[in-house]
Image 1 (cartoon, rainbow, N blue to C red):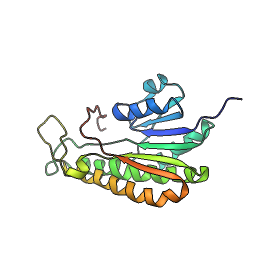
Image 2 (image 1 turned 90 degrees about the horizontal axis):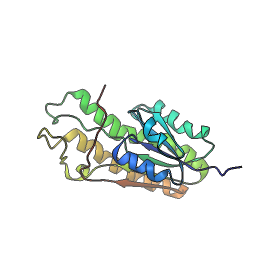
Image 3 (image 1 turned 180 degrees about the vertical axis):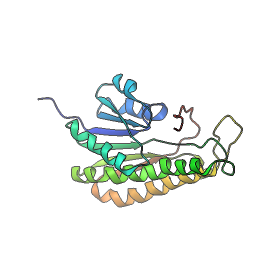
Length: 196
């Protein structure tokens, strides 16, 4: 009988930093590559990976994602929240829907994913979560887009919320053997999916 591999969930796994995280986990884990964009081709190139379409801004979608490891035979041990949304325009001219999407994906998505992942990690008595924020969360300045628009208050605010979530969860979950960390990278070339 083959040994069951622990499961790692990576959101935003179809490209860029999320894909790099999934590639790294594939060496030691069964990877659930979750993204709103199609990630089947990327998952097929990795050993022990499966692609799942997910909308992190919907709690039921996150719950279904976390139930997926039950089909792999392993227990869910790692969660990496990389899904991100940067609005196409500065705050004052951006339609409210785009600002809401940034908040829903960047902050609410991290909250929903954590909420869904914590119970199986508590059951296992261990786990690790990594949430991606942004340097913009600390500086209030996001050098995003080629249109000359740099500061995007809705993006910066939602990413700052992720840092606070990480700090709070780290303190709450440490007694239960669950590590929570945050990463706040600077600019990265991004090929984010277009909004539908």
